[in-house]
Amino acid sequence: ACERSEVMSLLRAASRFGSAAAARRTAVVAKAPTAPFARTFVTRSLPRLGHNLEDHYDMAEFMCKMHHPLGEYLIWAVMCSGFLVSFAPMMHSNYYFTGRFMPKDQGNTQLCDDSW
Image (cartoon, rainbow, N blue to C red):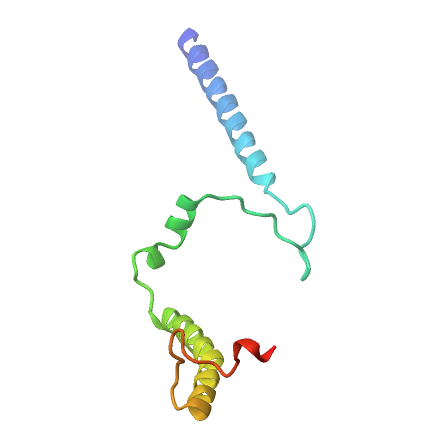
């Protein structure tokens, strides 16, 4: 009878321990994180204050040059077209009026010293 009471007390302790662990587990599951407010179209995200190392690992394909180069080619095309759009008309005007695209350094001008 003594042996049986020891076994029963052991089983009782184990069942209490198990039910306490199960209660903790269900309590954790019941406390699922919920958003404090509903996001809308105009909700601003919190700023992510990172550092350069984080960016290095976030953009690993870019840092290892695994990306497609078309984007870089487009940037260079925009820069070159900006140069052409601004300087080509001036160079054409120089050629039209003087016969040369670029004027000579220290070349003659149409202004004289006594003209003003």
